[in-house]
Image 1 (tube, rainbow, N blue to C red):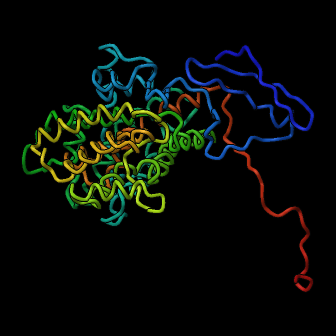
Image 2 (image 1 turned 135 degrees about the vertical axis):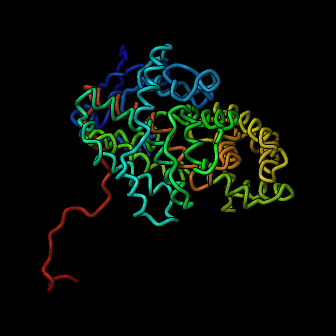
Image 3 (image 1 turned 180 degrees about the vertical axis):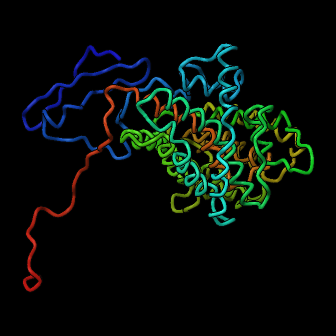
Amino acid sequence: MTTQRTATLTLDGKTAEFPVFSGTVGPDVIDIRSLYAKTGAFTFDPGFMSTGACKSSITYIDGDKGELLYRGYPIEQLAVNCDFLEVCYLLKNGELPNKSQYDEWVKRVKNHTMVHEQLTRFYQGFRRDAHPMAVLVGVVGALSAFYHDSIDVNNPEHRLVAAIRLIAKMPTIVAMAYRYSTGMPFMFPRNDLDYSANFMYMMFATPCEEYKPNPVLTRALDRILILHADHEQNASTSTVRLAGSSGANPFACIAAGIACLWGPAHGGANEACLKMLEEIGDVSRVGEYIKRSKDKNDSFKLMGFGHRVYKNYDPRAKLMRETCHEVLTELGLQNDRLFKLAMELERIALEDEYFVEKKLYPNVDFYSGIVQRAIGIPVQLFTGIFAMARTIGWIAQWHEMIGDPEQKIGRPRQLYTGAAPRDVQSMGKRA
C-alpha cells in the first residue's frame, strides 16, 4: 500500500487534507480515519458501497472486466487446475501448496472430519422440518463449547487448529443436517475419499449397500465449492470480520457468517432461481415471463441474471455452465424440463436487446442450482452448500483481520434523524 497524493476537502470554508493510498490493483482509497477530528463530520455511505473497510490481500474483483482473483490467480484457472483443498490452502496461506505441503494439509483436514459424539445429539433438538441453515447456525456456534483448546484468537496455533476443524467438519455437519431431515441414519466420514466425494458419501450412502461416488458429480461439486470459496467483502464476510473484531471466537464468527448468508438477497440466490424456473413451469411460457421481467410495474424478477458486483459477465458463470452440461449429460438429463427451460431463458437473455444493453447475463447462481438439483441435493440445502464452500473464505478473512495491527473493533457511525434533545414532562403536563 503506497501513498503519493492527498485529497483536499473543503467544509464551511475550512480545508483538510487526507492521504490517498493505492493498492496492487483497483481503485485508490482516501484515508478518512481523521475526518471527524479534522472536520467534525462523518461520511454517509449506506451499504458501504464506496467504503474500503479493511486492507486485504485475499480476493480481488473487477466487476467491469468480469474478473475474480484468489490471491492473484484467475478463478477460471483455479477451477480447472486445482481441487477444493488446494484452493483452501491458497486462501489460508497465500500460495498454492507443493506436493508435500498439500499432502500434509489434506492429512490434517482428514484427521478432523469427525464431530464430537455429543454434538450429534444437538440435531434431535430441532424439528425434522427445520431449515438446514437454522441447524447450521446452531451447530456451528456450539462447536466452541466442545473445542476449548482452539478458541484463543491471540494464539496462532489455536487459530490454525480452529481453521482446519471448521474446513474439515462443515461437510459432516451439513450432511448430518440433511440426513436428520430425511430420517436417515448419519453416515460417518470416510477418510479414504477426497473432500467432495466424502461429502457425497455422507449425503447419499446407506449402511446396507456399498456407495461409489460418481467422479463427474464429485468434480462438479468440487467446482461449485471453488467458485464460491470467497468473494471479497460481501455481506457475510463483513459480518464475520465485524464479529471477529470484538475478539469473538472463530466458531461464533463463522456462525454469524452463516446467519447472514441465509438471507435471500445473499446466499439464497440459486434457491430463488430454481423456484423461479418452477414457477415458469414450461418453455412455452418463457416469452410471457420475459415480458413481465421488463415491466417496471410487475413485481416478477428474473432471478439469476445480472450481478450486483459484475457489470459484465460473471466469470464463474462460464465454468458453471460447462459443469451444468457435463452433469446433465452424465445423468442423461439433457431433456430435463427445468434444464430445457433454463437454456431457453439463457438463449433469449443473450440475444434480447433489452438484456444485452443492460448486461443482464446469466450468473453463477443460474447454473449452480440446476447442477445441485441434478446431483440430488434438495433445494433447502443449497445455501448450506454455499456455507460449506464459503467457510474457507470466512476463515481466511478472519485470520487476516486478527493479524492486522491496524484492526479495531467495528463501530460504524450514523446520520441521526430522530428527535432533538428535549425534557421529560410529567404525566399531567403531557398533551
